[in-house]
Structures are given as C-alpha cells and as structure tokens.
Length: 248
Image 1: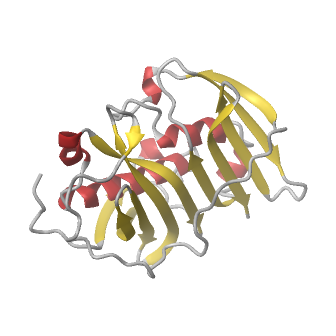
Image 2: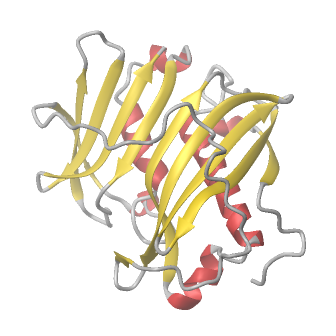
C-alpha cells in the first residue's frame, strides 16, 4: 500500500479491552498486552508503507528480536486504552520502536522493541527493500526507564515442560508467534502472582525461529531473592528464546 495521507511519525490508536483478552479477574492478560502493542506497531507500519503486505512484494517481513515491557498497572475489561508508538532508530535491517499505553490520559505501560527485517523465503535477515526516509526518528524519546538487553541464561535451569509446536502456534510468517513463547512460559508461573498483577516488567529475547512439529523444552530458574524468574526454550539443546520476569 502507498503511504497514507494520514501518516504521522507518531501514531496513537485506541483499543477497547474485550472479555476474550482478560484473565478471570477481568484484567488484561500479559500476552494480549503484547498483542495490542504489536497490532499498534503493525498499524503504524501500514500507514507508513512498510507493512507486511508491502514487504511481501520483496519476500520480507518484520520479526521481533527483543522486547522489554514495563508495567505500572493493567487495564481491565471495557477500558479504552490509547497506544502510542514511534520509531527510535531505523537503518538497514534493524529498527527500534517505542510504545506506550494510556488509560484516561495516564501512562500505565511502556515498551521498547527491537525488530529485524527477515526474508521469509531465504529465512535470514536482510536490508529493508522499501523507502523509509519519511519516518521522523526520535532517538531520545524513550518509552521505558531501561532499554532491552541480552538475557543471561543459566544453563543449569530446571526443565519444567516439553512441547511440540502445533499449527495453532504459528503466525503469518510461518514460525511461532512471539506471544506464544510468552504464553508457554507464563503457563508455568504461579497463577496467584499473575492474578495479583505482580509482574513489574519483563524482557524477551528471540534467538532462533521455531517451526511446525519442532520439539522444545521449557526451562525455569529463580534468583535467591525471588524477585526475578528466568525462562528459556531450547530445541536440540540450543536456546531459541529467553524470558526474564521481574516481580513487584
């Protein structure tokens, strides 16, 4: 699609929280929080002419490499949230995008995301084939207090679950969707901690893609102070994903 006449370098989009996105206490699931952030990023790329459909003309797609989310509060059922997004940096095959979520004008979530341009046929990163100079960049306008980082993985972590990748785990790029990794790990967190909204922040590193029928192992460890939980997902003993949860 061509660049929209309504294109702006900072996009704001409203979403109403529906019941399918909520945990039994009526608050937004962490996975659906990530979905809303990703959908807002996709909406911005669409009006800016660098959407999935635009990029598929060159067999390209944006894939998430790292993501940090800082949470003050979660919205609840029927809340209307405003998600704002802008780009901190964009060059060659890499982009850093910021996102913030507001309820009634109050910021409740900040996120920093790191994206790579991925050739969906060659299955490797490459430079973006589309023009992007019309995007104004905001390198100093940060959405989080801390930036994303490389998660340190404890290779002696306990294996808590084995899983096979099914069709329902895949997305339009034909690999496991980033939110699915988070969902698999959160299923092994004490439900009371989730229901009490004890997650202060979390960070995800995506290292290797997973495909249909891949067999994976989920590992977990916790620090001595019980303030941080770390998960990793491995295939053939090689790490594909890492998640670090920070508790309030």
